[in-house]
Each structure stands twice: as structure tokens, then as C-alpha cells.
Length: 494
Image (cartoon, rainbow, N blue to C red; front, side, top):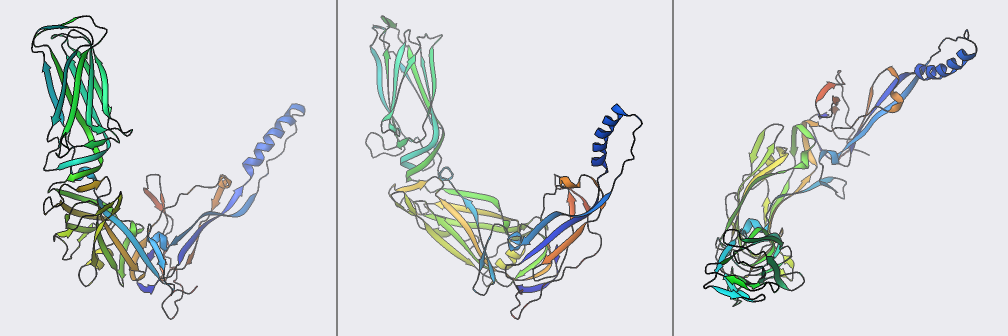
């Protein structure tokens, strides 16, 4: 449906069309099926009893499709706000980007490998301890990040123990730095088979760390990036005397896999995160051609920082892209490529009070009007976030929650007072012939329009398959659908 050039203040109007099929329906087949049963009965008694097959036609007006194109079809996923004078505004919000904690810092797949070797040849009884050690692993997190505490959203720890001692071992592995949801520290006791230097006993296990609290402050409670590990090996009490030779060993390896924090605290370093992506812009989803010229557009670009760290934010590029025309238009505004400093948020016992920065985009300071009138179906952007541009001014008290970090929202308020030129509005409808039309011999299609939009229009219908490939058009003759009359305020009358 295409609209001619017109300028009006729109009210809540609609375009309704109905498609009817007046048909000549033959009852011949249905009647014959009944006659066939009756004929067989007659044949069983009197062979010579025969009748001719009567049939008749019946005219019916059958509605096939009825649909309405309203303002909500014109601008889907938006909120239509009705003003006291019955005029309308479009309120449309879209998000450009959202970061998560692992885009700020990464808890790497850290691994630790240590080996105990027997210093002398000795014979030990079952139940005797061989080694008991406390290890502090420092700098388990790299990249200038200094964490003190964390809460895991998901992740695993892999533990491997390899023993060449000729007796079964009870191996205790304790991590005081990890606290389970129950409140106890992580500890596991595993059994290692007896082995030898050529055929060692091996244990491999994977442990889920989801919902574990992590303490990176070490034994002094003042360190950063430090984990405390305790492990002990004891000859199983059921063993008789076990001979341990010089060089017999127990090798302990553990590593962390796919760690994603739900919460982290410390110093997040002076790090830069970038996003170059696009997001769907559904405001003009059903407009496939033509031009719109809006009277006014009020747009605000809001950057929201929910991280407990100062941020320097830069928009390198923001473009509207119309895939129907291939036209890409970059936003022109002083904020583009100009760093913006945003203060840290506040953590009120888990309730985050974000810090926000708002940028007004008007026709006076930007090309936002042309940006929107490009009728984009996607927005392309390049963004940079620099964390702690002034260094560790918080004293290791930065914080971050998963999916509560940075958001960039584009909020629009567009009065529906516009000029439309050759505007093409498209929509698709599922179409299935009713069961009552199975025996249609012939017929005609009638299309009825009730136009409530303040512009004249022409209509065309296309038949498409399941893959939305057009196979045929249904309207060949030019048609004109008149606009309704306007009152003195250029608003459609009821």
C-alpha cells in the first residue's frame, strides 16, 4: 500500500481491508456419493432401475481475509502515546549494547602443578601420613586486575592426582579460599589406586564451582589474586606395610575451567573493552519504501554505568542502516569520538544505584532528523569503555555484578506529524482456503478498503509461498483509495 504526499497530525486511525470470494459451488460430487450408495442397493434388487445424476449451482459470498493496518503496524514494538488533543507521539526505546563481567576481566584457566617426591627409602604402616602441605598460589589472575573476593556464576575445577607409591592412598584436597553455598570450605577425600613408576595410580575429577564464594586475600587476608590450597596423602588404613622408595612421587595438578563470576570485588585494572556490533531497529519494520519527513524528533542517548568503577566512554560510530535501500548514515554530533567520563555506581547491599550520562540529540546539534528519516531497520555502532582511567583510586573496592554493568539506550519521542511521499507499507498474512471452498468451480475476488489514514493510497496483493517468494500479483488495474476528510486542525474526523 503506497501513500501519496501529504502532511497531517495523525490520530489513531486504521486501514481495513477484506477479501471476499463469491463462488459458484457445485453440489454434484456430494450428491453423487449419496447416489452411489443408493444405486448399489437398487442393483442388488432390481438391475434395471437407473436414474440420471442431477446437480445445481449455488452463489455464496465467502470472506477469505480480513485485516487491519493500524499505527501499531506502521511502527511495531513502539508505544503510541495519545496527547490531550488526540494527536499521537511514538515513544521508542532500543538498547545498543550491554556488557557482562567477563568482558571487563577474565578469570583465566589457571593451572597449578606440584609434585611430592619421597626423600628416602622407608617402610610405612597403613594409616600413616606421607605428606601434608599448605600452598599459596599467587597471581592466579593476570592483566593488571587485583581481585579480593568473588562469587561464581558457573565454572569448574579439574583435579588430577598421579601416584607411583605401591599402596592405596587416601588423598584429602582442601581449598580454604572456596566457600560452598552451605558455608563450609571446599574439601574432598579421594582414593588413589596403588601404583608404580611404570604404571602409576591415577585419579581425575571435575568439581562444579557454581555459587561458590571465592576469597583471593590469602592466609594474611590482605593479599590479592591469591588462593590457599591444603592437601594431604595418607596410606589407606587397610594396607599392610608399604615400602616407599627414593623418588616415588605424588603429582597434584588442578586447573580452573570456564570461570564466570556473578560478582567480583577488587581493582579491575585500567582496561579497555570494545563493542562493534549492530542491533535491530524495529520502528519502521513494515515500511519498505518511500519517504517520511517528521516535523520534530526528540532523542536522548543515555549511558548507564552499574559498575563500581569509573568509566571513560567513547562512541566511535553510530549509524542508521536501511537494508531496503542500502543507505547507511552516520550520526553527526560533537559526542562522536569524544571521551565521556562517568562516575562509578553505588552498591546499597546489592541494590545498585547506577551513574548515568544523558546526551540530547536535536536537529540543532546533530543530523538526528535525517538519521531517523533514513528509515533504518538496524543500527550499527562502535563503542569503547575504559575502566578506571584514573587508576586504583578506590583502594581495591571496585565491584561488578554479572549483566549489571554498562547499558547504552537510545530513547525517541517522535510526534506523528509528518509528510509522507510514496510511502510503501507491507505486511504478510497467512492464507488458507476454507474447507467450504473445496468444490469451487469458478469465482471472483473482491477487495474492500476502509481508509482511516490521512492520505490516499493504492493497494496490491501478492501471493507468496512458505519461503516468502512472490509467485503472482492479484491486482492488475490501477486503484485509488481516497483519504478521509480532515478538520480545521488537519486531523482525521472520527
